[in-house]
Length: 113
Length: 117
Image (tube, rainbow over all chains, first blue to last red; front, side, top):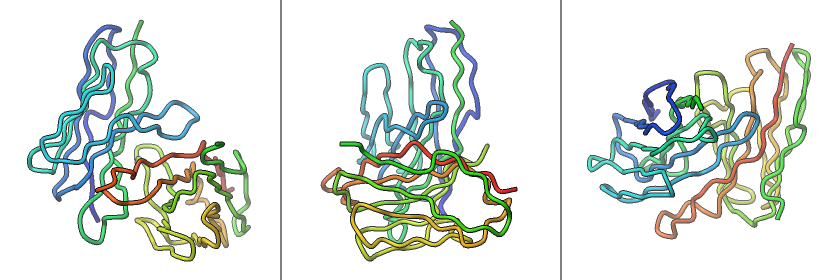
């Protein structure tokens, strides 16, 4: 099946620093999604990307849909303590996998005040 | 709207027991799905449904059954629980899967934490 490789696995940063994480795949994805999960909660959608090359922002978050349709990145600027959590990339593939959302393994973000 | 609700929040089973995890949504969403989340594995799709009466397998369907008799409900059944099914289970729903409508945002429930002894 389709797989997403997400990196880094974890990050420890100081408050105020910028953060970057990315996802890559060996196959093409038609939609890229970025989720954040707080402890004990379900994932919450942060940004959705629908076209190759698309760059979308949501407050301090910026994400891009790679031109090759096989990768995406998420940037967080000027991190704050409430950014702590697990960030997941996810995507819908093409053809028969159009209804199946594939998730990366997540990036655990820790922000030191 | 309550969104996506899941019950129970926590459950402990013995090997071989059966149980049903409940999921309901009040947003009239067509698409519903079940994921399991294990440490270091991200979320993996178990089963999904694109509408009432229609279900299909995801990435890790073995040991689980689903049915979709109504738009609102999508229960997940474990017929004979095994320790390998210890996990956190999330149900999700979205309006539909049409990229053209850009309405495939999936809303997740709060999860059910299942331990199988």
